[in-house]
Every structure is written in C-alpha cells, then in structure tokens.
Image 1 (cartoon, protein in one colour):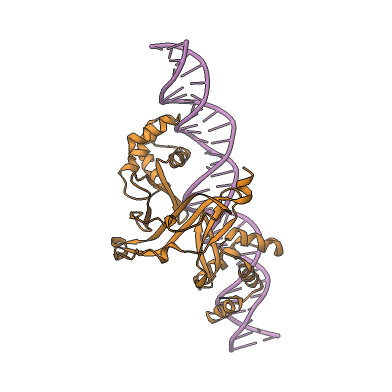
Image 2: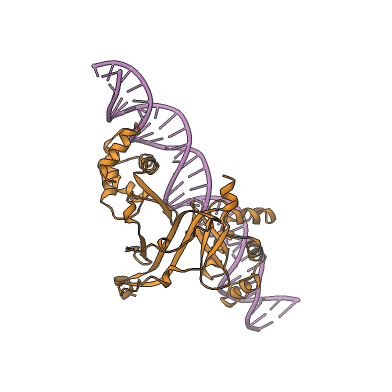
Length: 138
Length: 138
DNA sequence: TCTTGAAACAGAATGATTACGATTTACATT
DNA sequence: AATGTAAATCGTAATCATTCTGTTTCAAGA
C-alpha cells in the first residue's frame, strides 16, 4: 500500500481526493511504525493553520476502514500506520517510539476456535515492549 | 490472590481497610475476567449513592500497584481483575452484543519472541466475531 | 479516648475523541 | 466552462474516561 494505491482506493469507493487527505497520507507514508492521531494533527496544523480536529480524526478512521491504514490503540491514544502490503502478519510494537517489528507467525493458524458457537470474523495479536534503542536509553 | 490476601497486602503496606475498599474487592473477586473501571464505579454507586469517581479510580490503581489486581486497557478504557497468574487467557468478543468467551490457549506460550532485540512487556490477542444468538438473528 | 494521617468527598480540570449544523469544495454532468 | 450535488471541512460544543485539588471525615495506633 502506498499513496497512489490509497488514492485509487478512495476513488473506487466514491470518496474524494483532497489536498488535506493527500498530506495526511504522505506524512504517514514517510513514517516508520504507529503514529498517534494527535501527532498527525500537529503535523497538519503546521501547514493548515486552524485545521479542524474533526478533519484529521475522521479521515484517519476512514482510511483505516478502507484498509489504507492499520489502526491500534494503547495508553489511551489511537495510532495509525500505513498498511503493510505483504502477507498476513502481526507486530511487536515499541511503547516508547511506536516502531514495529514483524512477527511472521499468526496464532490463528494453529488455534482451532471454530467450535460452532462463535462465528469468527477477525482477530488482533500484538506484542508490546521496547525496542533495543529505547530499552537502552531508559 | 483473594480478598483475605488483599486485605493483608493492604495492611502490610500501611493502607487502611475501609468498607468501600472491601466492596470493590469483593465485587471484582466474583467477576470473571477484566472489568472496566466504569463498571466497578456503577456497581459501587448502587450501594453508595453519590460515591466519588475518584474513590473508585484511585483505589483500583492502588490495588494494581500493590499487585492485588492486574490492569489492562483496550477500547479506551482501563480494566481490572484479580491477580491470578495460573488463569491467563484471552477472549473471543462478540461485535454485536459484547459478550466474551474464553480462549484457553495463549499464543505467547508457543512463540519464541525473545530475540534480544525487543524487550517484551505485554501482549494482546483478541478474536472478534459473532456469538451464536447474534449470528442467528442477522 | 485522642491524635493523626490516610480516605473520601465534591466538583473542576484535563486530554483524547466524537458530534453537529453551516459552509465550502471536488468532480461528474451539462 | 458553468452547474448541481453530495461529500468534505469548518468551528465549536459535547462527550467520555480519567486525574487533580482543596476540604472534610474516619480508621486505627498511641
């Protein structure tokens, strides 16, 4: 997933492509790991003085709904990152800097949960901790 | 960990044992899994009309600090449960009614992630879907 | 019983997020 | 290029969970 694919996804679903959406997507495309919504807002307000909170928060949620972004949430803040284009996987997430590391294994593949009493539609598996640089500096 | 042990822990650390603390502990002792702080507050306000939010939130944090409770947080809410290391589990969550079902297996037990480059502190594993009653009625 | 410091109270403050009516804008159609 | 319309954004208020502050009440040791 990159900015071009994101634009196509937006158009395919009948959404418009605005300069603010472009800036949000370009900013997140440059980042490495999960970025708090607040931080995206701050970046955007540098260029668009008086930008409404609503615009940023609603667009981030929209992008996540469309699969353009991946969303997570910890320490009371929602965070977003560009969707990884490769195979299904999960993340280790650094609580200090938000950087992520792939976990190649998916627990769902080894776990039998389809017991007929629960129709599974999705799942979330995340490991939290500290990456080496952040762990050292604390 | 049970209510008696919790009382001892409180006393050992120089904290007082009040009727409100007793009620919070007894309520959580009867529960099965993580309970949102808000829900503890609602239960307490049934008996103590006009009970301060502060009393419940501060006590829950205190209990967690003392190791009486385990704290977690998702969907923007802090949640607590009695400490019980041998009962570690995860949940299937119904997206329609919110009811949960235990998953007896923890993927962390079978996954080697301690590669020295990441200090693991916690993890989250949740399966989303629909329980039988909700699935039938849709 | 008395004393003292912790606990609880009441309500304001905070921080993140969402909601809403009014206005502006993107873009397909004319 | 001009127009119509649904979507996007604005500006601000509301909400939700939680924390803080200053004062009063109370548990438990002396």
